[in-house]
Image 1 (cartoon, helix red, strand yellow):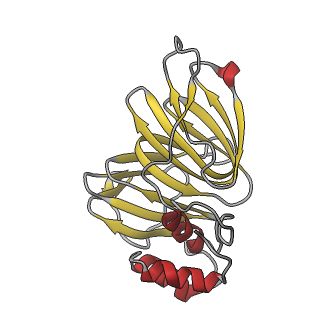
Image 2 (cartoon, rainbow, N blue to C red):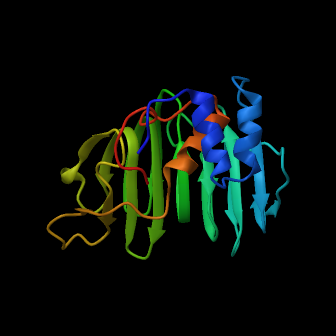
Length: 219
């Protein structure tokens, strides 16, 4: 369980529990402004088809690709991302209308205030100050709104549009591309992302997720 505690005490506990040096550096930075760009690069990571380096900016119109066994952590404005292996993410040149497209793979994201649009193979997702996890697989998308609010419009059945509000992984789902299915969006369980990772990403942009300080199940 998360117990009520101070921000710095919580982060020290997470770091002591085995989270890597990225969180420890974020803790040392305290309330400093978010540092943009790539904060961690492990394995083969490409930005616009060129090898990525720590400190490199990721900007509108850029594409980030991670190879087998690779991982990237990066910050864009007040948003932060953990991109897992074998993933491809494209950021729109007009962030106001098409912020990003998750083409393949797995992406954990936290977002600051404001409306943004995410495109996946099976849906368009409008988000407002959220944390979310996405996995793209053949014919379906896994989507967990870890906290916040999102409008999910499945491509196969736009009339099934749903507005989701969660506080702590309350409504994970699979979104299917098959229009013959009676429901495009079906319930799922929480998979492949953790509260520690969300906390690390939020700390990189000077925030904590809303579930911190509340009791309940920890993922």
